[in-house]
Length: 226
Image (cartoon, rainbow, N blue to C red; front, top):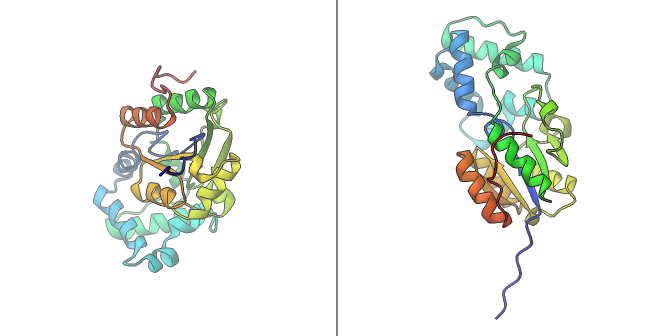
């Protein structure tokens, strides 16, 4: 009996924070340390927003509202400064809080170069990012992406299935033709549910090897962004 042929993989969709940047948790904890906020207080604030159930997360979490573009950055900064202040006993200046945070995010040159090589080898590429109103380093993206999907601009966020489908549509590909890379397992699992092939990013070496196998071409050569 002949099995159904698997679609050829032709698209690569990648996250930004934690994939094209260094580790998100470490960056945020470094920022919190400078602000005088203990790492546990930072984690506690986000746990309070997440709530005990999926329904509570959707209703009460300002992060989700921000990522969908349903509240302004300045409003979220007030929420975050207030939440951190209550758990740490310190007063934070809300204005510019996110800019101060994202100053600790640094690029991951090897992963950026991999995406560049993938596109120039004939693979269609897209960025799919949940935005916190941050400035993306688009100045280094020349030649890297066929499409850029930012959650706050499209009113959807990962792990909602519709945003994965939207990203694939921007590449004019079916989800089954695309690979999705993210550092958060629940985002990867949702991409798989949407029909994509999922890769949980833990390191450049592991991800580069896995993508080379999936696409049937060597994507590991070279480390620097051209």
